[in-house]
Length: 109
Image (tube, rainbow, N blue to C red; front, side):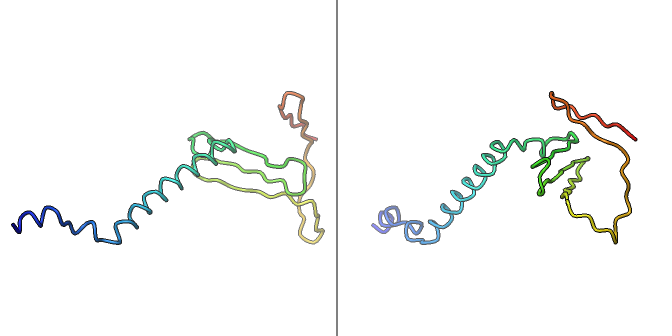
């Protein structure tokens, strides 16, 4: 008779923490699905490839950002329209033109 009671009564059914493990699994699946959706929405699949690339966000504006990837190193450069005369040590070395097909041509001076 005690054997029948053991088959009917399970300790797992009374464990309140079993619900939390299921919620954690659902949250992890949701987070991965959200990351994949964002990567495909913003066409950022290049970041995960092994190829080197350069990407310009907001070209020509004050908040322009240039993102370059060389090997495993990703660098981010922000443009600044403000010129400070105290620390600027550069000079103009050429002009870059962008053609209608998107190709950029650099002409040294």
